[in-house]
Length: 234
Length: 405
Image (cartoon, rainbow over all chains, first blue to last red):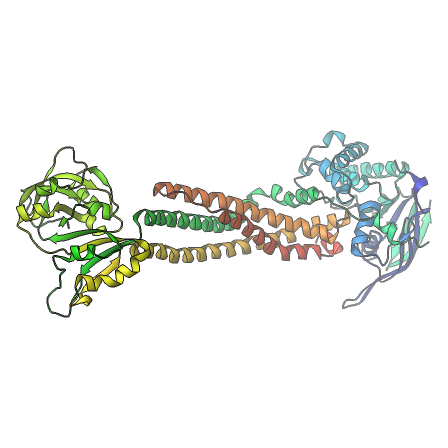
C-alpha cells in the first residue's frame, strides 16, 4: 500500500512552464509552456487528439526526454539538469510505466516480467521475487505467475505490465493508452483495476485519446497543439 | 523547493549486481537458442582449428624430437661422391680402419651394396626385384643405427659366415615375410638364404629398410663378392661431431678428399620438423581467417539483435537501466556467445588432436598455452564483436527505442 505521509512533497509531479522544441528541420514546437501539478493519490487523465503533444508530454513526465525549457519536480525534486545516470535512478525508483503494447519480454514468466520492474533498483533477487508475487496477487494474477506472456490473454498481459509498473512503489504511474490494444471487456476490467489501485493510494496519470476511458479520471487535462486547453476536476 | 542535492540523487541511483548483469546478458541466448548455436559455429571452427593444429604439431614434433633423442644426432654417413675423374669414386678398403683411428669416434660400421635380385623363391626370375637391395654389412650395423628387431636376431660372428639374411622392414613386407619362426628361405642372387631376422624401421637410414643384409664373409663365400665399403656409418661423441666431420674426408681419402661425402643422418629428421613448422604457419593462418569470419558473424548477429530488441532496450531504459547497464547487457551476450564458441572449439580441437595422435601412435601433447590462448582469444573476439552493437544499444534514445513503428 502507498504511504502518503512519507512523501517529501505534496505533489507527486509538478511541471513548470515546460516547452519542447524539436530542432528539425522543420522546427516543431511540440509543447508550449505547460504547467501542472499532480497531487499524490490523484487519477489524472490527459486527453488529446493525435498530434496534440500527448506522447511528448508523457516522455518528459517520465524523464525519457528532456524539455527545451522549464522545470520538472518529481516528489519535490527538480530533475531537469540531472545526468542520464541520475535520471535512470529516478525512473528505477519513482516512476512506473504502462505501455499500449505491454512490452512484456518473451521467454520470461509473468513473475519474472514483474520482477524486471525491480531489476535496476539494487534489491536482492529473493526479495524481488517475493514482492513481484505479492504484486501479481494484487492485480489478480497470482495463479498465472509461472505462465509465459504468450500463454496469457491480452488483458492478462496488460495486468502483468501494470504489476511491473507498480512493484517498486513509484511516486506515480504513467499509463500511455493502456487500453489501446484491448477489447471493450478487457478495457473495462483494466480501468476497474487502475481505479482500485488509485483508491488504494497509487497516483495514476492516464494518457489517452479515448474520452470513454478518460471518464474514470477525477481530473481531466485536455491538450491542444502543445498547450493545456482545459483542466477540469470532477 | 529545490531538493536537487547530490546526496539525494545518490540514493536514487540505478543499481545492478554482477549476477543480474550475467543473467540479463544470457537471457537473449536462452530465448534464441538456435540462433545462438548457429552464430558461434564460426568461432568454434576457428578455435578448434587452432587448438587442433597447434596440438597436432606439438604432438608430432614431440614424437620426432623423441625419435631424434633416441636415435642421436651424432651419426655420420660417409660415402664416396662423384670425383673429378670420369669413373665413380669409391672408398678404399681400409677406410673403416682409418676412421676408427679418429679419437672421438667410438663406432664404425661399413656396408656395401651388392647387385642382384632378391626373390621369395627360385621360380620367379622375371626381373621383378621389388626394389630390394642386397647389402653386405658389419655385425655392429644395428647398434650403430640404434635399431631394433621385429623378429629373430641380427647377424653375429657365426651366422655371418653362412647363407643367413636379415631383412629390412620394407623388404620383409614386400616379400610377405612376417616372422622368422618358419626358417623361411629366400632366393638371393641365385642362392638360397635363410631369413633369421627382420628389423624395425631405421629412421636414420631409410634405404636399409629396403635391404636384405648379409655378412661380409657370407658375401665372399657364397656370392664371390669382395668390394670396398660403399657407405660407412660413424658414431662419434656428440661434442666432437663437427671436428670429426671436418677431418673425415682427408682421413678417408688423403689424396682426393673432395671425393668423400659426409652427411649427418639426423639432418633428415630435423628437416622434417622444420617442414612441419612451415605447414603449421599456413594452418594457423587459415585458423585465424576462420576466427575473423567468426568475429564478423557474431558482430553481425549482435547488430541484428540490437535492432530487433529496440523495444526491449526502450523498456529497460524506462525501468531504470542506465546506458552502462544496456551496454553491459549486449557486451555480456556477445562475450557469452564467443566464450561458448571458444570452449566448444577448445574441446573439439583437443578431441581431434587426441584421436589423431592415438591413431599415429604419438604421445598426446596439448600445451596449456594453447588451451588458455583459445579461451583468451574467444574473450577478445567477444569484446571486439560486441563493442559496437553494445555502444549502439546504449546510445539509443529511450523515446526512439520505445517507438513501435
